Length: 482
Ligand code: ADP
Image (tube, rainbow, N blue to C red):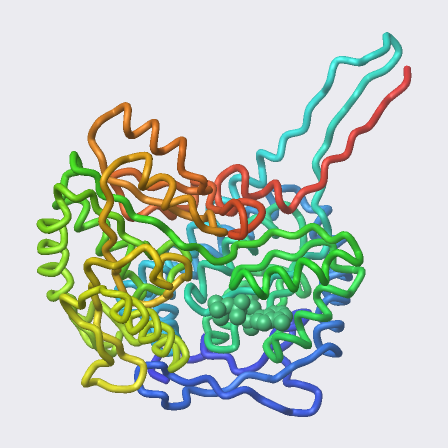
C-alpha cells in the first residue's frame, strides 16, 4: 500500500477507541476491483463484537451529549481538517478498494468532509420553540435532544461520503454511532476512524465494526440500546432492516434504490443535456443511486441527442482508476457486470439497438464498455429495474403528459432529471415528478447544503442540509404550570 501516511491503512475494527480483531481471529479479504488482487483484510466480526461496540457507544453517550454544540463542533472541525489534509491518501485508498478514478475519489473525499464541516456548524442551530400557552397558567416549551446511540450501515459505491452524511449529523447532534461499512470498501471507513481518533473525538463516540452483514446487522437492529438506524443500500435489504427495527420501534432513515428518469424535451439546450447525461449516467461507472437509469428523449431531438451523446461517450477513458486520464473505472464485481449484460440482452431481444459499447472490455475482469442503446421499448427490463452500471438506454416520447406518466411509473422515487427551457414547463414537470430530488437542466444534484432523499420505495428521511440533523433528534415538549 503506497500512502504518504501508512497508518491510515487500518486492518482492524475500531471499537471504543481501540483497534480490535474478531474474537475468533477470522478475517475478510478485500480486493481491488480493477485487478481482483487482494489489498488486505479486515476482521470478520459478528453479534458479540457488535454488542461490545454498542455498549461502548452507550458508555460514551452521556459525556458526549453533555458537551455544548460548540465543543462538539470544534472536534468535528478538526476531523474535517484532517480529512482534507489527507485527501490524497484517502482518495488513493478509495480508488484501490472501490475502483473509481482518482480524481473522482478526491472529489468524494472533499464531498464527504463537507458533511462533517456543515453539520458541525448546524449542530449549533438546533433550535426549539416556545408555544403560546393554551391556558393562562401554562408555558409550553419545545426542546430537541439527541436520540441516543445510533447505528449506520453503508454501501460500497461512496465509501466515505455515505458515512460522513450519517456520522456528521449524528455526532453534531450529540448522538454516538456504531457503523458497519460495506465489506467491499472497509478501508475508507477505518481511515475515517483513525482520523476521528486523531481529531480527539472521544473513545466510543464513533465505532466501526467490520464483518458479516447479517450478523452485525441483526445485532444493530435488535439491540435495545440502539435508538436509530440509518441505512444506505438496496431496497430489499432496507425493507428487511426496517422490519427488524419494528420490534423496538427504532427510528429508521433509509436511502434505497432509485430508477432515475432523465428527460430531454424538444426545447432543451442539447449540449447541456448531453453534458448532464454524461455526468449523471457515467459517473462512478453508473454506480450511484441517483444515476440516470432511463433516458427519455422527445422525438424532435431524439436523433441529434443520440448522436451527440455517442460522441461524448466514445471519449470516455476506461481503465484502472489510478492511471492518469482515466474517466471510468471497473464495476465493483462480476455480479454487477452480469446485471448490465442482462439488461442489454433483454433490451436488444425486445428491439433495441446498440450504438456504442455493449461488451466487457479488453481490460477484462470487471471492466465494461460505456454503452448506449437506442429505440428501447417501454417493456424492457431497464425501464423498471436499476442497472447500476454504464448503460444509457434511450427511450422515445411524444408529449409531456406521456413522459411524466412513464417517469412516475415505478416503485422508486429518488432522483429525476429533465432539460427544458420553457418556464411554465419547468414548474409543471418539476412539480409533477414523484421524486425526492429533481435536477432541472443539471445532472449533478448532490451537495451538503441540500436535502437528499427519496419517496416511495426509495426511502425515508433526508440527509444533508438543515433537515438532515432532524433525523438524529427527538422532540421533547415541556408543559410548565405556573
Ligand atoms: P448494494 O447492492 O449497494 O451492495 P446492499 O443493500 O446489498 O447494497 O448492501 C448495503 C449494505 O448493507 C452493505 O454494508 C451490506 O454489507 C449491508 N447488508 C447487506 N445485507 C444485509 C443484511 N441482511 N443485514 C444487514 N446489513 C446488510
